[in-house]
Length: 80
Image (cartoon, rainbow, N blue to C red; front, top):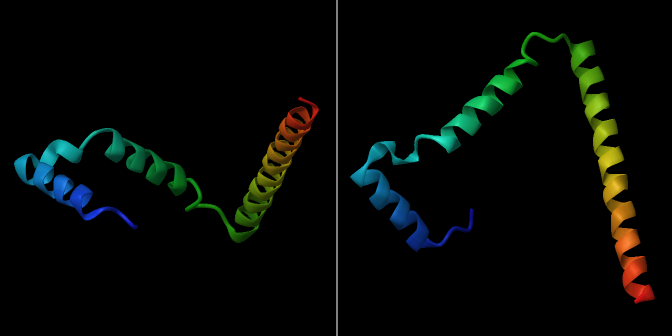
């Protein structure tokens, strides 16, 4: 993960002082993602493929928006 050793040492020291110090938001986010992911457990193969295609389409759309905005910014910078 390319983390500095000092950072890991601080985390270990913090955990040794209080093992519950890492409870909270991080665990909440993890639990939320786990619950969100579980909604796919009962889907059949056809439904999973349809969901994947829907998400791929959404990703392509969002990528095109980003490229468009980037192009607009570069165009504005050139005009300045």
